[in-house]
Amino acid sequence: SMKWSATPGAAMNLAFSGTRIDLVTLTGPNYGIANVTLDGNAPVAVDLYSPTYEFKKVVWSASGLTDGAHTVRIEYTGTKNASSTGTQIGIDAVDLVGVLTPASGAQRFEESDSRFARSGTWTIASSGSSSAGQFVYADTTESLMTIKFSGTSFSWLALCGPQYGIASISIDEGPATDVDLYAASYQYQYAAASVSGLTNSQHTAVIRVTGRKNAASSSTRVSFDACEIEGIPLQAP
Image (cartoon, rainbow, N blue to C red):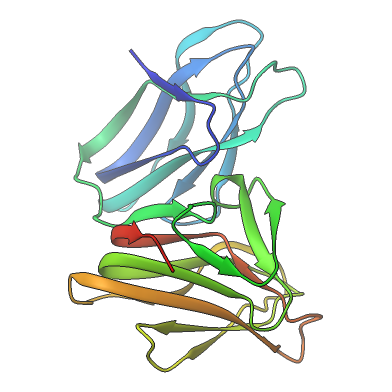
């Protein structure tokens, strides 16, 4: 058996301890491109297209790793080789020099999650390097992203770049902390702000467009790609 998906936002997380991992899956004429991320580094595009079906094919490998804990994330991108008739991705098995371990309690939730509340003007943008292939951004001052959750930790993932400005984030109506999203070159799935060690109860994170920017930036734009929560999102007001 194997698992496959052609659903935006679909992803699989694997945690292991060891020195090598191979991803094994079916490739074929209707398979697309997956993003594979190791230990939170830049995602690698893996093309699963082949003119005929090829079973149990090793499509991506990482070796020579430090003998310790690692994570791999496989994401549906919705993109494909020009020769492919579809965008689905699949996973059949993994080969390890090491052992699988229980995944971290933190789970990733995409910007499209209906429980997140956006106010102001947010624009959806597509990018194969973003989590699940897309993110949102806002240029208007005081635009807000509100995430309500029950749990113990929260991490905001953003796109940084030459035209990104300064956002603020506050937790549970506490003091706002400035977060500068400017970078000379684009940085995808960047952990812009994190908080942990919260009481295991309800919390609210608010991300705001301040209208301010680094002197080197060309605009005050703020992005939201995804968030990782050790807990569950709740319906935001």
